[in-house]
Length: 194
Length: 194
Image 1 (spheres, rainbow over the protein chains, first blue to last red):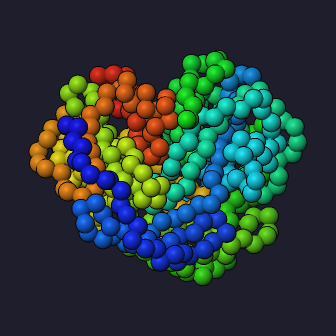
Image 2: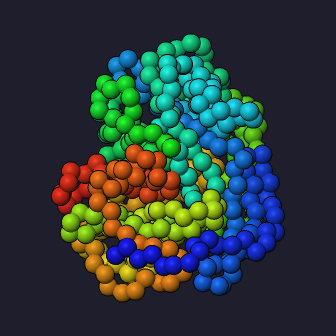
Image 3: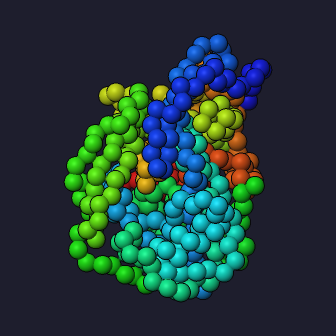
């Protein structure tokens, strides 16, 4: 197929009505755009000033640390990898280490970037930054309140969760699918973000 | 580890302030919750009455059909699999077939469910329903306006896009990572949603 029309593909911003909603976590603004074909479009953008991070934390046996949390938007408990939002002045890697420590009481050795992606690029500018680290070890108590339970899962258990459709959290699904692509026992992840 | 505190893990809804924003595509409401440990929490929920769908459409050579679109929230062109929102009264599968036809002018043979997940479960109830279909063939012109270009990509090309961090769209990343797990040339996908 390979059909590439000529011309500037950008949808130009004619004007913005600014924020129509401000929450502590994101804003929604309404932009008025001109499509390249000449028609005008109203577009709501969910803007996340704080990027989110998640981490695949592995122990010496190659198992991954998972957490179960109540997720109010879907009204149920969901298994996930440790994840959360970056704080002011924090690097993505530092945020991933903090979330791991707060949610599980664990630290890992060197951390490597695994991927960066937009979870819902039609609606939002949110970015998820994924990391992977090994030699996870317990160093403190988890912070109380956020996590309902914590568990180690080996590759076969994660494969089974995916096969059974049980991994409903997109960030964890991406992180664990990328982890499963690594040859077992290798230290270097196969994929990096750019 | 395997720490499972006892007690009801649900965050109870004490009351809702209702919708604080209504757009044609989603609503945002503010709920007032009681955490199981007794403290109260304000929680904004982005609610999507329309679920979204995406489809991995393969030709006889095992290549996947991809589309490039301007994505205003991130201000750039993004490669993706054909995807969009369900319309009233439409099944997820019918929506996937419609989006494929509208965005690429193609139809596929039997369609199988690939996965169902929440792209951003901390913020939103949005569900993405992924499908896979084979024997893609051109049947009409794509609808003008939404798609900047269309291209076939083989497995090696998709592997390279992932390795280079070029696949920034979460829905497509999940769909294509699941597709790459299938042994080459098999008709049945390895994974299904439940």
